[in-house]
Length: 337
Image 1: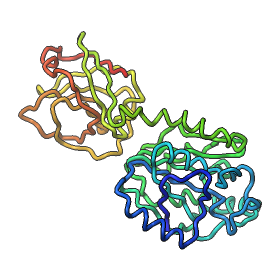
Image 2 (image 1 turned 135 degrees about the vertical axis):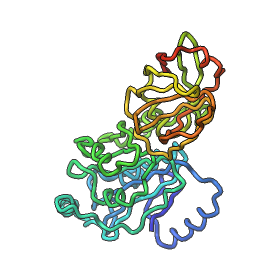
Image 3 (image 1 turned 90 degrees about the vertical axis):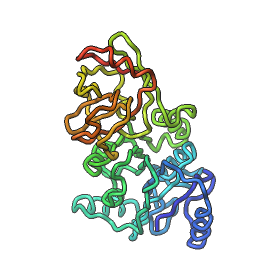
Image 4 (image 1 turned 90 degrees about the horizontal axis):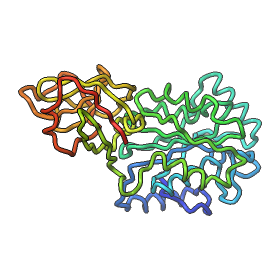
């Protein structure tokens, strides 16, 4: 089964006996706190026939924590974000011999074989998934491909991280978009060489700041919009579309008035819409429409409150909406952080 692990002490070994799993599961069921982020990872160390230091290379094991390198990084991320942790476990463990593991992996990749997993976690409660793995043969391990095939990541934000033996992530991160066409995969994944494992806490902490806003802005990010010599304040939602919009700032969009209810225009950059769209709007809502790739601000209800195309709310104007009545038919909207 997939084991949901709350943030672990780095000095405790991740491998758990069946009895301990049962006790831990019972304990976790009593928890009233449900995290919105989860860390899912695959590690050679925990997927060997007999997990020992001899069954892995230096790239796969962090001696002081007694964890596989991917598990070590996963636990740092989980501890920083107070996330739940799910290790990926295969039904048929990999050989203790690393050379034999390499041979099996090459065979799996060449044949497109997906090793059967013990189970799949229920990721329904989570918005963001940190996905970690070692880079094998310049690619994602087939065990991870098996996990991605479950479809559990549809509509979620996926942030990848990997460990390697000096060759980087190669094509591993880039291939995730192919496996996850309906997820928002972050381009800025974390890579860590085996030679730098001891510096992982510092490096991971610095990297996470790109994705985890300050505590005071955990759910909302304020941005500015200048139009017609006036300045608007917008609070962004905590959705994948809003986060992608935020990362593209600053940007300018030439937007035209329509129907006495909105200003809309072409979105300068693409946004991968993965949340649930809607056909109604509230006054002040900033939206993205993937059908015609447009950004819009709805400033007033009209006699046509229902839309013909689904829009994805990204935020809301919190300043005075009456300024929209003073704008020209076409204006350049400049969005900035």
